[in-house]
Image 1 (cartoon, rainbow, N blue to C red):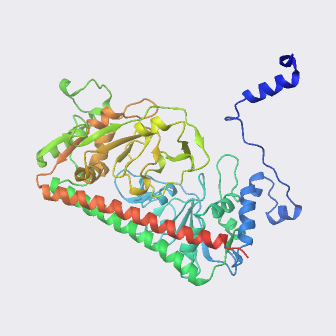
Image 2 (tube, rainbow, N blue to C red):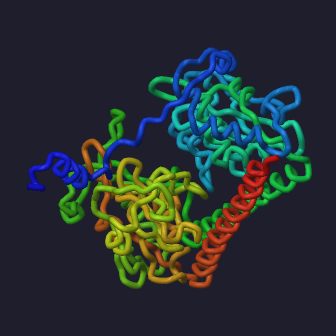
Image 3 (tube, rainbow, N blue to C red):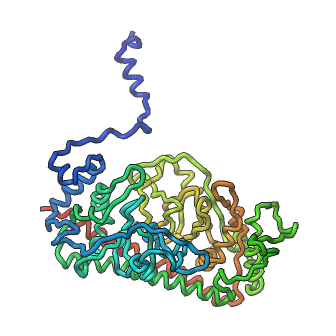
Amino acid sequence: MVDSNLAYKFQKVEQEIDYTYLPDQLKYTSVSLADIFKNSLRLEANAFNLKAKVAKEKILANKYGTVKLWSEHGLIERAFHRPRFKRIYVVPKEIPFFQPSSITEVYPKPTKFISAKTETNLESLRVKKGMLLMTVSGTIGKVAIAGNKLNNQVFSHDLLRVTGKGKYDTGYIYCYFLTEAGQHILQSNNYGAVIKHIEPEHLKNIIIPNAPDILKKEIHETIIESYDLRDKSNGLIDQAEKILYEELQLKPIEELETEYFENTVGLRSYTSKLSDLGFRLDGSYHLPIFKSIQSHIEKFGSEIKYLKNKDISKSIILPGRFKRTYVDSEEYGIKFIGGKQILDLNPSSEKFLSKLIHDTRLGKELLLLENCILITRSGTIGKVSLVPKHWENWAANEHIIRVFPKNKEIAGYLFCWLNSDYGKEMIKKHTYGAVVDEIDTNHVGDIPLPILKNQQKQKEINDLVLNANELRYEAHLKEQEAIRKMEEIINNTY
């Protein structure tokens, strides 16, 4: 019988194996002793990464030749980070203190504030406009150019500050590290068993195409145009928020008066009416600041609406948890971002959700639309982002709540309120969870939105924000244009 044939049975079993979730085939290569000596006697596999090896070969074959990035004939004048120091954090706003992770944010804001009494050279921690910045610990290799919002701001020690030699070198180097080849070469220099690091000295081993000055100038100026557009966008956001504060007569939130029942022993206590409990017995829900904000906006606004109102939002969506199936490229998948990335202009996610597997869920829950508002709902609560045009039809994970405004006439104003210090406090009011903080769609729906008495001013705020969002899209296009020019240089071989 054919069925008893062993070869036939083996063939039948082999056909039934699902290879979808099997690990990738092992990649290996040989390394010469000379390469080990050139690489400072490093023996870890990452130092000889295959992708980096291919990238280096491509760069070396480049038509314009190469130079070491930080060398006598290189493009870097100076590169440094600072030593560790003990920080003295303060609650009142004194010196804004930025973390390296914020350099890629389109509107960077300080995470904490430190005292002027901190025992370190604070001036050496400040970055200057036009300086190239790079993360060197944890998630390494993120790059940015300091714009208006970061000029003269204090950063932590573990941020690489780079100054270019020539007039057009900074934007050129920045753009190089945005390319796949540049990142592969940079990442091959990291070290560390648990937390990855890179040192300024590693830049001396990195090669870069030595393009003519005219090409460097084109790339640098295009990048600077992109950052100028971001600065203009941020200026419009600031202008919109200023009008909002003036119309609602809002002070800086730290100056808002709040009433406490007792504060004589350093312990703040307060009362809450039974009718105000809302079945919430956690003290953080009833903080006096929330009452102060609510009463203030009721007094100075024409009326209070809520995000769940149908004339404010079409829908508020929180996707359910699901098992994700990723694919290798955008051809078969949808770009997939998380809460950490929603403040960036160009999220660096390399994850793509399968269109085939997640088709139904993508259409119902996951896809983003221009001018919809994203709010992080777990872990770090209350990050707010307005989706720009180039994010349209991307997907975001289940840790982000989507608010789809009723129309464009309310979208910009709604974002301006939620993005303000007052709006963020009203988002955080609903936080629950013993270990990981959470909010859900019902909580977002209960966030108040003050409608201005002067509707013309409200329209002005709305238009300013939407114009700012359009400028961010234009900034994205400029940066992509520069990246294409850099890739043409890399791929232009003999």
